[in-house]
Length: 226
Length: 305
Image (cartoon, rainbow over all chains, first blue to last red; front, side):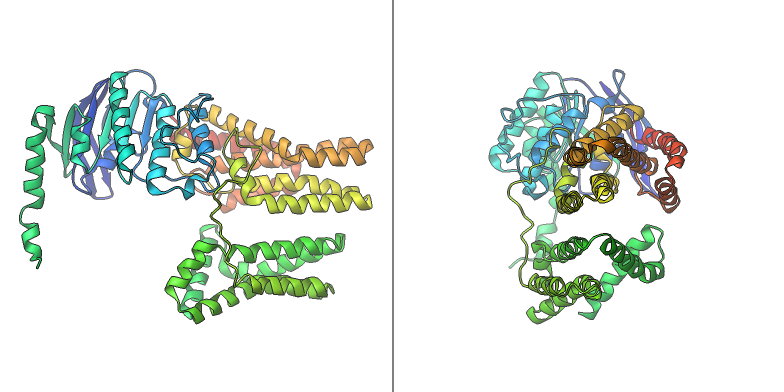
């Protein structure tokens, strides 16, 4: 289990996270939704230990960073590195030797080509494959469905179901509500640095409608489209 | 067009400032160093002219990279684009042409000039569908990616080695065996993004030892053909060959420890001077390397808990 207690993060005078308290259990899939700039990526970066933050992140067992796989929104690939070498680097970094990479290349990526030349969706899939091959216990997936084709979306959804079945902890953010409702046990709404609402599957439809009403409001009317 | 070149100068000066170098120092001493180095190499062997010409062409070729040229084509009219490219290639090619003319390599200077000019009209597609093969793929990443960028320099080293062996010049041959090591040092020149360090489930000491072990073993692999060739032709001088390689391994160790002693920043000017002192006076390495090693552990402790 991962316990967050009054997690805060500021960049200069700008407060991004204002005291987040939550618990994420093994075998649970948790969605984080919110507007652009709400603090989703910052929250993930705090959990992944990439930034210094206030409050506490408790994970009682082995060092969290050694068993956490973080799929970032934008993944950087070193120049002149092939997809295969990227996967080797990630697995060797976790003391793993993976011999059957080709068999486990479920997205059929061209692993002999330079990763920097992949399309946006291919880069996302390569980075996701990397964190999956690391045999992590905790997964933070920041916009895993972004830029990915529909077939791969289906595969990723099934992968998340399998991770849940294996008792992993998964945190996902997405701007596509349907992808979260299809995979998550619980969705947290992040607004202005705080979890303002947390709903389970039974309340997803209501949350989505509320979000549409609040987000859209009269904006389309104000456009005065002709 | 004028604005473009002014912007390029501004960017260049930002790079210089970021590395602690005042622009006027680079403008004054850069050409002096360049000419001095070329003349030094040309004094050692005439074949250095080919290496110098090749290096000049490779620099001009980098300006022909297709995505860069596509960007320029979009922003400028066709006439402005061609003028920009001609000026750029002239700036990069002319120094090499002048040095070659200075030493009476007329034909080579002419070829250099013509190739430099032709490259304006021949964009090079840097998008390679298939990766350049490398023997370092099994243990990524510095040597795997660095080899792909630097193989022309390794060809130059092989060329110099061949010349040295042909004329029976032991000093040139041994120097050639050091070039892979000097090139390999550049693989550790820039700090990698934090992700590529944090992803490691290692202690700081374990991470640093792994980097050192991989670096040194892969350098040995890279240098092996060169060492084997020199030992074949000069077997009685194996001790010097061994010591030269040992020294280059220490230089690589110096580079790796210095890199992580400054991580995630680049190596600062003070540490660069320390490195330079260690390379010029190798006994200093006995103190400099442990200094960087200890600092590196401290820096990595902030990144790898």
